[in-house]
Image (cartoon, rainbow, N blue to C red):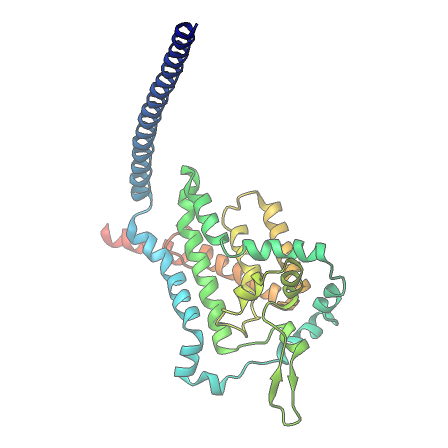
Length: 319
């Protein structure tokens, strides 16, 4: 009896070892297959990436990309050193931010203050709806550039887009540099003492402070408290960026591009970040720059007037 029991136990142990060995072998084989598949796909994607980069180099030479990006690079330098440059040039003392010009212009154009009307309807739902285009604003330039790059037929639009975006941002920050203007959240909340000295004002995140309080995280406060440009209400670059996409092969069609422009313009007024004239100024600036690129001069528009004149005179001289 005891012998039979021991034999059964040994047989059971042998089967268990066999199952474990088989499973270990299966796991090793599966790992090897997975490694081979990974290496194959890695090489495949590497070659695809190399081919894509070679195509890009042929279609978008480095010199042209650097030229197209140069206005935007200059804008980034001015923007990131805004306060330092104003202090060094003496503009900090001679060109104080205006808190009266935009309210005067707003009332002269609309006979009312649209941002005050819209902000009266504040609610958590509308706060979330307004926050979407504002949060999209930050990765928007990069995402649209990627969108232009991934299709061969759209890649030729990348350089005009960079050139247009660079000049719009550079001109806007130059206006804000020379003539800083206070946004409505500051004008409506600022407190001065009897001698006209500044005491306090609202926070840079304006109407989005409600959303920060609702979700319990200082998302918008963290973003806007770091901005070096507190008095850059006019023109609105928040509204200008969707307008730049509108004039540069918009990704979901013109109707959606116009909706995006109107959406962020509404959000800018609703959150009291901008006046309506700021939004109109941003759109108008984009249209002026785009018109100038097409009709007057741009190194990336063959139809521009000065480029056609230069090309024609060069061909005559060569003849």
